[in-house]
Length: 124
Image (cartoon, rainbow, N blue to C red; front, side, top):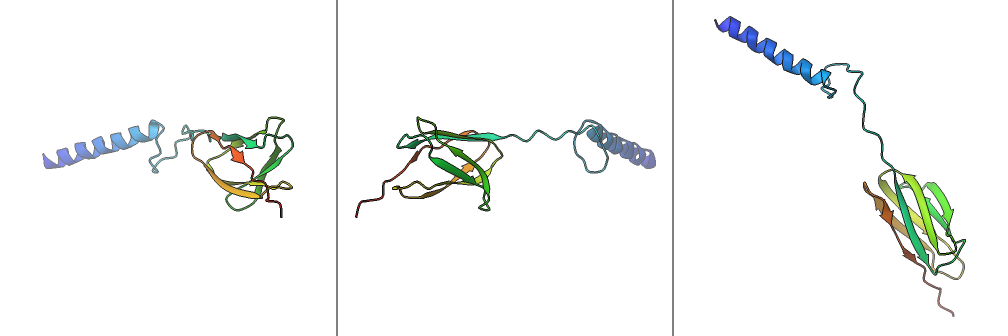
């Protein structure tokens, strides 16, 4: 009787393990080709630079300091970076007569609005 119980229990455990693999879950013990990982989501950083001027160059750097993208503000001082995965970035702005900015920003599963105010260099 005990032998039949252990055999039934083993079959039941194997049935559950097989059902887990066929449902698309990643159990690690099967090679289920139907599993599709979720798509990578990309997000944006948008904002306005003050003073609101056209053609202010904004450089986006990744967490390692490598240039990821570059854009210029429009006539309203607005800018936009698109198709960015989650991560830590730096926004770098260098404009004549203004203090250079090197700001850190993090994208975490959402589009991000990041407004920037440039500070004039004081006259000597």
